[in-house]
Image (cartoon, rainbow, N blue to C red):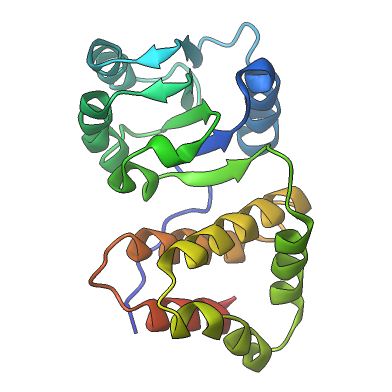
Length: 216
């Protein structure tokens, strides 16, 4: 079993899947619900909007991100359709070792254009149309016994289906956020822990999913 070293459930970097047309509304709601912050007139909230996030944009963000916030925390909201590979690599260290009291919120149509190393450092939320069956599975997973949860994850373990497991974790995380952060903060913390290790192909899918089933 892995030794856990988990931080506060208020993760430092979030990815919101949402279409560009509703990006500002989604970001506004997320900052209100997760950070208890408003966007309008807040010097500690910076919105960086671009069609394609480049290496120069990444360098600008890195310079600004290491400045101290005026209040308790600062949040950088990045709204874009895509992030170039070299820009993602430039952002990686910033996401790994963020400045104190600094958070990042990426709003994109799809997280699947991001490198696995970047995705693994982001808390996932979706504002696309929900799959009813997937949401039902997430709800069931939280309500049944440990033995039944262990049985539910066997489909991913037996088929060595890491992608299916990742999608399940994403759905579970989104469901928990919709049901309430405080109510589900333990589950959210465990999901983040498991998904981060899941990106490592050398990690044991069986151990990770069984840990999740037992620990929540």
